[in-house]
Image: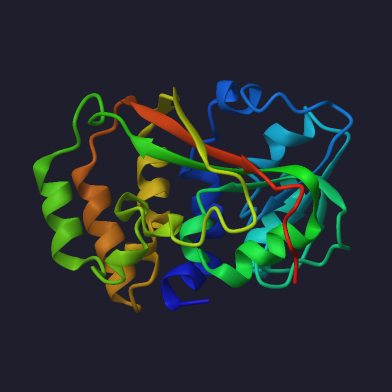
Amino acid sequence: MNDLARSFERTAEAYERGRPGYAEAALDALDLPPDAVVLDLAAGTGKLTRQLVGRFAHVVAVEPLDGMRAVLERVVPEAEALSGSADAIPLADDSVDAVFVGEAFHWFATGSAVAEIARVLKRGGVLAVLFNQVAGDFEPPLPAAFWDAYHAQAIEKAAEQTVSTGLWRAPLPGPFEPLTEASYSNPVELDREGILAQAASWSMIAALPEPERTRLLVELAELVPDVSYRHPLRTDLCWTRLSFDAVIR
């Protein structure tokens, strides 16, 4: 796990406060039965997990970072929370009907991770990758000075791991069928504290060394007006099924 991904450990509470959930219509589109056993892989604080437990009989949430998993266990006690990673999923072969990955697949988009996901899936099982993407500016817009401060001080590295590059697609389809893709509107409402919590959870800020990280967050707090905000987002869903003739190693 690289330093940017590991930075979420220090910002679990901010992640829980500021990050959105996912469009329910995206989950509806998968048409999975309610008696399904599903895995939320790299579950974080359970933003997606809490939506899954209301839909499926048994939800397993695997998260490698202790701080994130501690929040998940507190806010989604209905799920079975386990320590593990995409390369070492602590489940038996052919044990789940679907694997969900929310806002995380780009951190571990490798052939070995795809093979491990395939190992725990039943034949014909679903892999669903979800990302929340910006679909417009904050309403009202955040001040230009906010973005100037962010871009001047945040860690601008590992750009190849951002979702927008599409590089996360490289190991797919592998043992899976071709991807099906769709997008669903997912606007969220945030107050000033929600905006600041979301900013604190951005990996490019979370990975800053101290005291630079705290200094930047203080500066950003001084630039955010205390009003209600609407953030137009969309949930992008990419999903596929494990081929019945897949060779799993």
